[in-house]
Length: 197
Length: 197
Image (tube, rainbow over all chains, first blue to last red; front, side, top):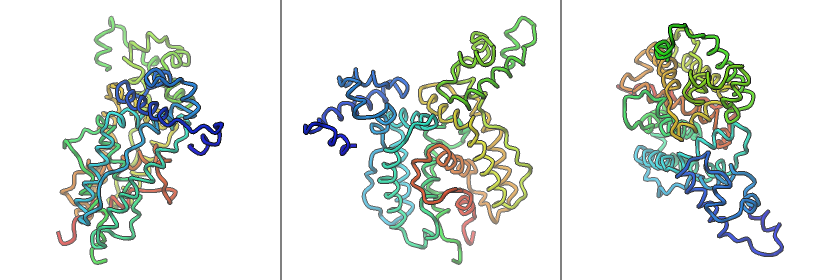
């Protein structure tokens, strides 16, 4: 987007403080008033940036919300090689990312918007560039005695991501007996090479 | 709800055809125009039932959409006892339930509404009364050599439900290499008792 914007202006550098003000206002509104009420006019009023300027920088409200609510890059440190410990640390970090008021407001609303035909790019790129590679690193650091190399790590990541979506956003569907379910023990079992292999 | 309604009326039996017309109109609208545009006034116009009558039967638009879009009771037949086969059949049926235009329109919109404080009852009850027991039946039909009895079946169900949510509603987050991912092989591995147990 930056290249496009640069190409468009008459030589004047883009004022990045405007972007930051708009994104900050969007984050605050999502956490305070929720997805539906985070409209471009509410964002304009909060940030002091006119709606027309916002629309020149983000083609739609949905794309602005995606940019504002993209999951943070995980701050995990290098894996220890202890798969159980690393996997639980990873699960806890992703669960925490989903638990923020910002994520709770934005993510289900974005999923609903995608079903109504809104395009999705930043969320895609952010997961591909951050959480997935961090997950591959956890598996790579573990030995072949605990991670079967024939398993597609994306399949395991999707189980983990999915269980966190269920626990974070579908709480009432649960009818569950335990308070704080965790996927890690089952994933450890699923990753293990078959006996005698 | 039926008991409440019976208690409320002046002895006249409730006209169930009105309920059916409203629910049918809601289903059609969800599939045709999506979650946002399925308003009470659109449902009233489509069904011919006045909005005031609709609100007497469902306290909110969200509760009407839940009733209309609750996942169907699974029609799986009894498990065969072949865990791989039964689990894949179960996964395929749940995936198919999520793939209907009705479910695609309703489920992400409902998840978003729950985050904005809307109560959720029917979806909860429907999963508890239908898909979860059908899943327990699949595990119960398999022998202890393939299902470790110490595993909580709800944990495994949540992995499966979650991976289906990811594959059904977060397609662009994927960056996946394979076309039609399936959770069954990993779940089979996770369920297996430890070697030597």
